Image: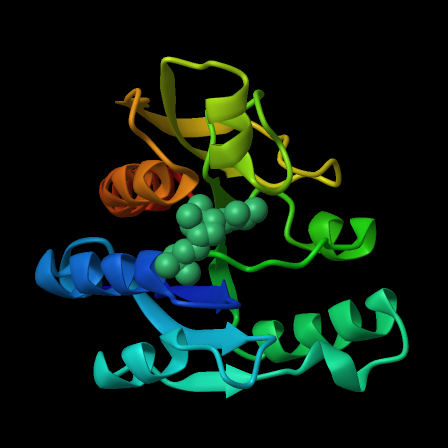
Length: 197
Ligand code: GAR
């Protein structure tokens, strides 16, 4: 591979199932050899995040930056940026990273910062998307992969998956159905983006 390696840094706060799906796809589909891309680090803002052990089991180094140790959002984001930039990433992937990001942070990664959100954006930005979709009487729900802008859960849409909302659904059963689709569309959307970066 003559071109520079495209490093991917993943940010998580919790279970890390999207992160694991992405790492597994990258490993199984040989992104290293075919795309010159690899996941070089997983960073969590939560010391006990379940996903950290999962990342380590998949052979990816992990780092923790606890937001509770910072006096302001700006101070945390600046420290996070320093940590991320040490990996010289082509792409920064938010995978259940439950933090609102400062405009400066978002601007620094313009065009190379992506997120997955558990709704069919532009519907249901923010939290509790599945409960809100059920309460609104939606017959379909889903997930959206998008580029990140300073406006929460906005930005160019890269991929979406649609699932039915069933009459018997709770927020939990709907979330589980959506998550299965998230694990499929996120790696594919990132693969497509890597090819044009
Ligand atoms: C996923 O459903 C993801 O779409 C959502 O959090 C979950 C993380 O699960 N993200 C957001 O709500 C971001 N606003 P995971 O840690 O198992 O990937």
